Length: 203
Image 1 (cartoon, rainbow, N blue to C red):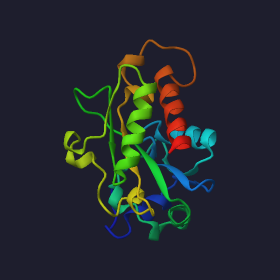
Image 2 (cartoon, helix red, strand yellow):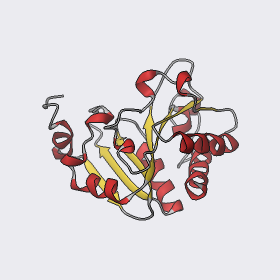
Image 3 (cartoon, rainbow, N blue to C red):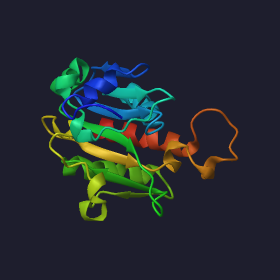
Image 4 (tube, rainbow, N blue to C red):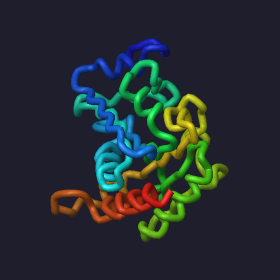
């Protein structure tokens, strides 16, 4: 996609069909700024967790005809009054991302600079997600998925936060769910939401 490095996030926000949402509630936040068609279901999960837990919410949702990946370090509050309000309001947050890697279909990765929160999230999610591995050991997380850059929005917060990488299966995507015809969220996604709700409330 076109765009200068300095203005790439602002350009995304101006793109037709891109929706930005900010709801300021508690000082704990939930983020999904690669939502919509890009990292599918991350914004849906973030909405549900924030509504249940009373957390603040920030999402960016791309329309079906757009899949524009902007690195997290370029998601700049200077380009978005809404994101700036969110960063000023919350102390810490969980940023939800989607990823897909061969051999990691049931592995969740907990990066970000708040390592105490990462350990807490891992413990709580492990108790909710049977059959999944939740990894918070940074040495076991691929470098590009660790979410440690200081300009990553989740690390700009007063207490920093965590970047939670979700494989397709726990988001209700992929061939594992091909034969499921019931509408709504899959059981694994509901379990994830329940775990994140508990993690936010007990942090």
